[in-house]
Image (cartoon, rainbow, N blue to C red):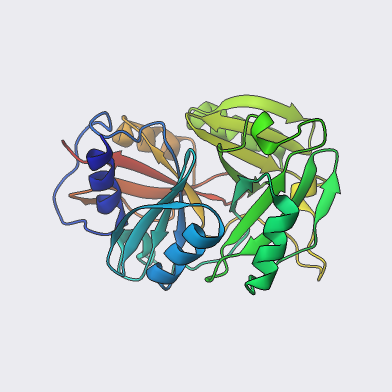
Length: 289
């Protein structure tokens, strides 16, 4: 099964040809896996950062084009120059690193890890935010992709006591929490786990937990230099679906924005859509076998 996963991930990374895809992701193990994609300029450097500083394991690497690292339930695709996941859009827009869409890592040794990262020269976007939900801070990887570190609130002696210690969590910025919840639950098969009025909601699909941070939530506060956290960017979740073509037709009928056309190859088929706030979501159908 791990070999199959590696083949699927390799195909996702950039070894796509002009072959057609299969009708189902059932052949691959990742239909309900939690996957996010980051754009990087130096794959080796990105792999070192995530494995040496943030506790990820290297699952596979395809030279300078692509790598997959994982931490608990989260699989992070590192797309370098030349990979299919980094190709420009039909209108010429380049997929670049950065933005505000980010993975959230729960850690036990929060303060100690922050100190180690500072000593290593890691860029920090903000100061530690502490509150009833615990403590959180944003760092940047070598390409400027954000990573949010989070420590569980008091009442849990360890992050492991909470449900998300090794869960796969991604945070998106939204302007209308109700509208975002409706989109993800009605169109993309997510379940609503909890909602706090108009400020915040958490939805999930398989291993993936998606935090929807609305205006007023702690995860949407401006940075110390005044920069606002906004939706969009190129960091994105990847959803594996069985009914790829049918889902695309339903989304088009619902007026969902599409960033590009379907890309088909030996790795299957993939396409990028946008949620109501412009956050990207990559839909993927695995190849046959």
